[in-house]
Length: 80
Image (tube, helix red, strand yellow):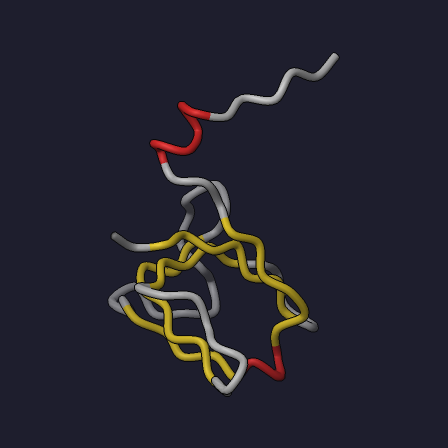
């Protein structure tokens, strides 16, 4: 099952990517599929037909792991 990541770059807007597994501490690249903006719009800097992207981890400032559909049903924090 793919893991959905929200990847923040050093000098570019963040992207949503799907990966098969989280990057290891020894990895130097992040390989992701289905790149898109958070609102599911296409990414302007990529060609329309691009389905897989490879980014060096040196260009990434941090990564957020988005919950899957099952996790969203299980945990819903209460906020006022």
